[in-house]
Image (cartoon, rainbow, N blue to C red):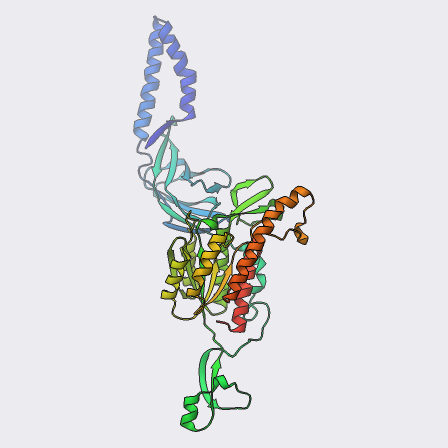
Length: 467
């Protein structure tokens, strides 16, 4: 219990104590004695009020949930339960010590009146998280007035409530609205499957037009008639998203305020300044991972997740279902960029050891650095012969052809400024050509199109039965 002077006590001190102390000091007669008695009376009453009221909140309990899940940028309502087992309280003021990455809408403290003995009240404390990650509400404060109204009695609680803030996918889902509509397999329209599948179905007699590759020669020798193997379209395949959160994943992506969607909380509010909002490439990678997990579940595929920096740190075996999606979400929402260089060789060795069945590997890796791109190219043969690999990254802001229609320089100074971006664009093209010789496609979409392009690649692989 921590007491604090109530405004009424301060007024008593101003209107009574100060004049009485002045008379007591400068007067030696009856007025001085009367002033001394007044001072003693005020002191005795205030001390008695403090002693009697010190346990006023001792039997009050404040309860918060142990775990709260919420989404970045959306309002979070923290349920607070106040139970009074002590004397009746005329009014009560409460507040929660919030982390710096949260914002309070309205008043920082809440107030309620008339909490009777043996009663409990359920109140709501609204917050708004500005950043994804794992946080704790460690401290809560409660305050009420003493019996005579001279003191504020305060008590501190330690609820230790864990708050998990997940990425906000509203903007990405708006861009992929056709995928999430409940119309057919991929959401927008039915498409024809290309290919004959890879799962063996049955043996049948040879028919004119059958491919000689599909002839089962051992069965043909036993039956002394040509026999053909038939296959069925694979319905369940393994999809793994591999996210790089090494130093290059911290590359900033600037977004003009005028182009930012309403309610798009992909961008860190604390970094907003001038005409730009700023986020990181890793944020886009995590959004793309969760969106692809949702699409893979709708397609009936198994989805897995791998994250790495200087080494593989999180591996989730491919499964499906809502519980598995929550497991993936819990694995990635605390990822932060690490100031280390990626070790692609260690990653490829780990993938080859863990993944025995052919799978689609969607790698979200930044290859804008030529040395990093060369190391990735050298390590890729460890897995690309067994698995189908797709690589995607966010296009650097300046990486465009010098005289592209959307980025035409207007002055001579802008020509020199954009020349560096042209060289970076040329290096990315050369990296894409080298990867294409290994059968790997490198996608370099704009930040807003990363999820759309990745999902389109996945659906195209699914349609053509390339896995």
